Image 1: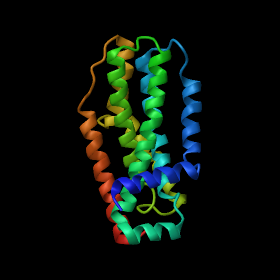
Image 2: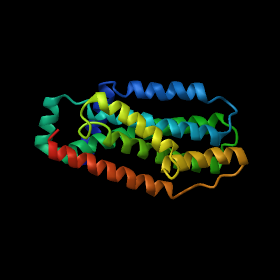
Image 3: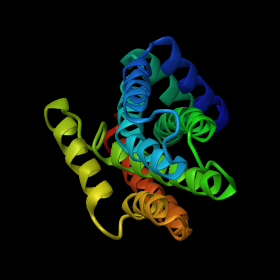
Image 4: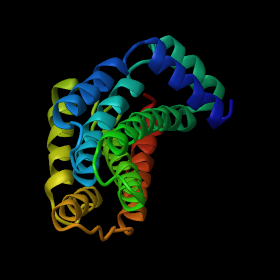
Amino acid sequence: MTLRMLTRYHLELLLRSQRWLAPGLAYLVLMGLGVSGGDDALSAAAFSAGLLVPVTGWLVRSAVTAEPAQSRACLVAAAGWRRVHLSALLAAALAGLALGAAGLAAVLLVGSGGGGAAAAGGVLATLVCVLTGAAVGAVCNRPVVASAQYAVPLALGAMVLVLLVPGSPANAVVRALVLGARHGGLSAPWWTLPGAVLLAAAAWWAAVAVAVRRGE
């Protein structure tokens, strides 16, 4: 089975199992509470992007735990642990991107000053924060951290860190949007995208390596 087929399978499983519902509704409700018509588009895009870090991490947990053990064993026999786990991570990231795209479209539609700069900054922030959330979710859930007793608080702590610690791609891009809204001009930190890609790649590689070694 190809990685594309496996990713599509995990996306369908995420939808059919309704495990996307809790993070998806949490994102929509918080967007509804935090964004209103006439808000500055850059500020609202920063809020949307920041939400995507925990929401995407939650989607990763939903994706990697959605499959029954017997079904997962059959997939592993056909495709191997590496592709099976990687496809679940990809499915979660794609789901996060879909939510982020919908949220950003709404922000640009109802917000003020939603021009080309706001759209470009919003797209950048969405990509960076989804990748960051997917990285955190990969290393704070199965198979790296098997027990929910430890996985959930570790993931929450890591998400707070990547949003608050200076130098983090998510922190830098959200801060740039907020400052752009305050001062009337956006200086987009484009380095944050390759930084987030490298962070996600390293986290996913580690998670897949652990999945192969542990066989889970």
